[in-house]
Image 1 (cartoon, rainbow, N blue to C red):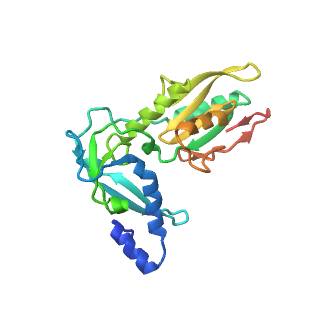
Image 2 (cartoon, helix red, strand yellow):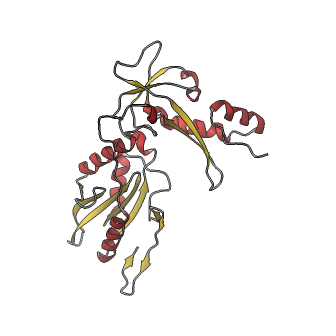
Image 3 (tube, rainbow, N blue to C red):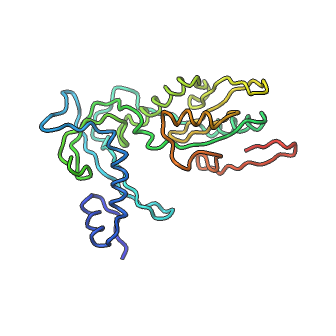
Length: 257
């Protein structure tokens, strides 16, 4: 019998009791372990500070088509809050920039191209809105408590911009500057061991990172120090922005993407 995708924790519990498997409860446990960092949970009758907006948070269920893995994500009802005073727009790298950078990598031999995905990207960034929520059943024994949201939780109006700004700050710490033609192409003057001077590139499309450098893994590892990367996502790119990538050897022996 095909079961509907649940909308609440109590529905997932009922499905678990009927089916005798823990697919949904495991998905909830995994998500809540990652997302709790976004909540400053208050004890007792402590209330939210004056000036903070109340928001409702809710779990969203899904079933992934590749393997039918169960997915649960805690999201904030950002549509219920007033628009923040800070800018909420978040830019992403363009496809044209990706093509230009990959062409440049092919023309400059011995440059590596590596890719990586940042894990739980938005949750790495501090929130820019003043909001609080009352915790639901997903939080177990903390259900009913007041919590201040301190990270850029998915669903907030400012979440995308908060993460983009947070990542941009770290790019600058690493010595990269934003390209004037595309703000999400980050450039840094480099010199290869053979004395060849060039500009390395780091391209950012939300949490998808593409790096072109003579030692690209070293740069990826620097990003991993501040932004934990998904296991299995680091290495030669096979797909970027929905397009398949593959390395080929040209007639002159140069490798290109």
